[in-house]
Image (cartoon, rainbow over all chains, first blue to last red; front, side, top):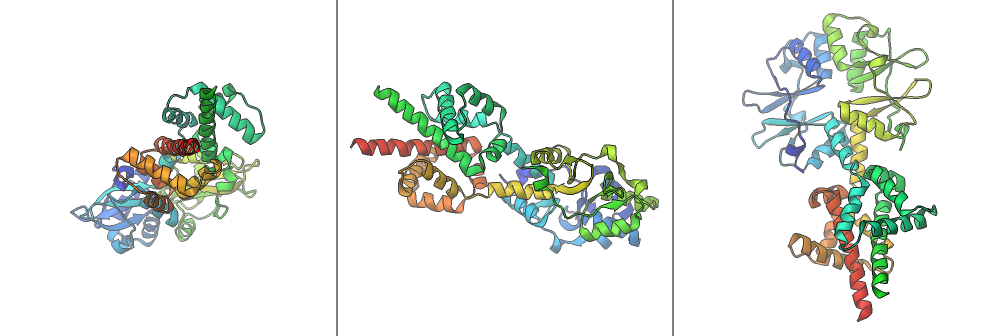
Length: 211
Length: 211
């Protein structure tokens, strides 16, 4: 995933000559704590946060150019940078927004912390059932019932708590990947459990074929 | 994970009687776009954003009580709520911060979007190699070399691009789970690939035993 696929194209940019008072009203209206400042070619030249605005209002500054951060102090990502770069910048520097620029240094979008939260959170929201369906698809010839039966056996063995294939199925239908990771105690353990199920399914199939 | 394990305990709270000008300086200094307003018992009674401050400064409001959002309009999480609740609130409402309260409605922390990004991003930063180690551990008796050889074969088959066991190992040592998910095109596909590797390892072992 590239930065340009993660960015919000819906943003407002400011001009050096804009009035501090006017900009404060715009930022309140669109509810943005940060805004890029651009020149006539839409190239990034500065950065405004609500902190610059409150200071500017207090001290009576008139124009955005008087209160903005300079270009050199702005962390940007290029549109073709991996989305992860924006995520790491946000996480390490506690940014609310990172501007996305193209080859000509024009601002073309904003990567926002809340959008990253939504994206990462959605990945975790994938139903565990879908992973089992992918597994069934991969282990050609295995029925869903066989898979659930093997999973229930592995779960009973791992947790020491007896669970039926039907109960197991009900669990995974209602759980998400995120919940499963928390529940099993981490990504590695979750995957180890799944591998274990795959192994058992194959073993049971081999056993049946020999009978 | 509970909200109280995700929250930042290091925050500043405001009082209804605080002056708007003083608060604007404090928020600039600590670089916070939002702050809770509490009573003498540290119970949450209001909420201030930088938008309230800019409007207050423009309109000449003096006290925080004149410009704050009322308690009824503040989304909170309880300290014992699942951390996911704060994540969902942040993602769905584009919040920057969600206050965490205890049974007495006292503010005890803040869940911030940037901290959520850091947490979720760290989960994705787990090295793929660790997942393979867990897999090897699970598939008892399989050597690391066998696992890499099977993985290289599966990868060559899936991508159509020839890769040696050594190259494959070099790849997974340097890649993270997050990168692997982006690279394979999603969690289900990544996972199907792992199952496929496990299947091949078992098949090769069975083949060897028969020879």
